[in-house]
Length: 135
Image 1 (tube, rainbow, N blue to C red):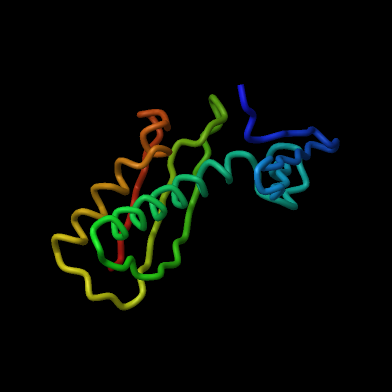
Image 2 (image 1 turned 180 degrees about the vertical axis):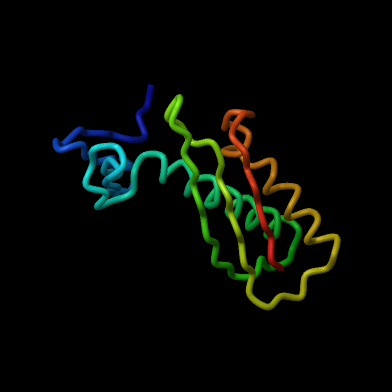
């Protein structure tokens, strides 16, 4: 089996994950509401961010395969936690696209592939995914 990530617990509720192919590093820190310092992404922040990143990535792949350009975008992600059990209960993603010349059919195709992205399909059906697309 070939590993893709190495993760180390480095103390004080902090971890370091290294992407082995690129050597890129991500630090996580426990959030302040769960005994941490909140000085970096929490693991659940990364889950919420991964949903948004996956959606926009597959939209970019779709645009490339269908010979049109995906407009640049900026997204805002909100993660809502529940307490019993402690878990992500809702992720709100608002994706704001810059000026674009997309057709209605292209927009529909992009939304469809985003909804079917691997991260969205991997999350529990109990986790509410509220996605707002501003084309």
